[in-house]
Image (cartoon, rainbow, N blue to C red; front, side, top):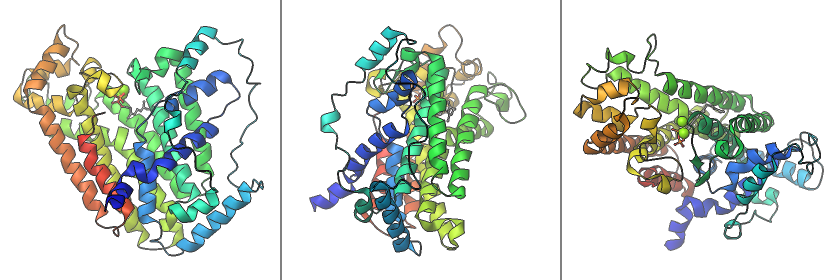
Amino acid sequence: GSSKVALQDPLKLLGAEMGLLRSNVQHLLGSGHPALDTIAKYYFQAEGKHVRPMLILLMSQATNGLAPGWEQRRDQAAAAELKREQGDEGLGGDDIDEPLSPPSVLNDQNPSMLASAKSFFSDPLASLRPAPTPTSIAQSIHQTHLLPSQRRLAEITEMIHVASLLHDDVIDLAETRRSAPSAPSLFGNKLSILAGDFLLARASLALSRLGSNEVVELVASVLANLVEGEVMQMKGNVPGKEGLLAGAGGGSTAKGPTPEIFDHYMKKTYLKTASLIAKSTRATTILGGCGVKQGWAEGEKVKDIAYSYGRNLGIAFQLVDDMLDFTASAAQLGKPGGGADLKLGLATAPALYAWEEFPELGAMIERKFAGEDDVEQARHLISRSSGAERTAALAAEHSKLARQALEGLPDSEARTALDNMARDTLSRKK
Ligand code: FPP
Ligand code: MG
Ligand code: MG
């Protein structure tokens, strides 16, 4: 019936959770310094898609209860939460530091900067958004099938993602993000970088408190992967060689991308986007009882399913992102679009596929579209090519692999919602 359909809609399934996530992140990011506080929270004011937290929460719901001892794990978590709610802080307390300085002192700040920042903080959608659940978190563990540690992991993941966006918008000279001025354009590069660092620091602190070294290892390795992916993209370093097209034996003469160049692109795509999704969906199954320490042999299989789902969905997600850069406008995307990657010198999947049909793209790709009319010409050639369709087809293959991975889990509402998310990644418009 229709209620079943509604329950499988991820946003309806998790609507209240996303409200809670926002308010918890605000809390985790509190700083006594007004500028830091403001910038660190800035991208959370806008309406993000919250793809990563939704995937983590749904994967939690789809796998909780599989590992032996779930009831005990759940009841212990509920008891600990209850103790905390009753004022006995204990483990998991969030107040880490005294404020750096009284929040009222603004005199070392540029007042006009703060004024313009403030105007973006009024939040007209606030009343439409579900309020944080008023019921006890301890009670909600039974209703939602989510552990507090898994919610926290979802928050940590979104914080890491937003940290990477703050740094990314400096690197990419982006003017806009989430349909508003980007942080660097509003606050400058230096404060944006520092705010990203602050988010990472608070995410690390929260991560250390989850109480699982296996999870800390996984998520720490993601941070390295994000940087590796970004540097691969910047340097185009096919191992052992220099230059974007080093694998092609010179782009201007090559007929199209060599397998080495395409592999490089796919590896970069995994590192910069899919790694965070794959490893955080894997990590949540560890919190649910599939960790090595629990000694449940089948746990490895569940972890691998979560990883495979996240990896393939993440790759599909980024492929669609790279396609939308050509097929959607900046206004639609709420961030630079319309060939923005070309302006940054980047040849993504649509350009690589188009190169097979239009060999003249090779020289442009090799000089990173730095020639006089390169960006316009390349856009024109790519739009006449099947690059966008072939990128969509590759994304569809990965979406299918993600959905196949789910077949290893028992049927549930959450599994169906995960399946829908893998399907809908292909048709997203922003
Ligand atoms: C967005 O890609 C950016 C990323 C997916 C990762 C960026 C990673 C870094 C800047 C390394 C630093 C990492 C941390 C954790 C601080 P995009 O530019 O293709 O997408 P966009 O169109 O959304 O800007
Ligand atoms: Mg970038
Ligand atoms: Mg960018």
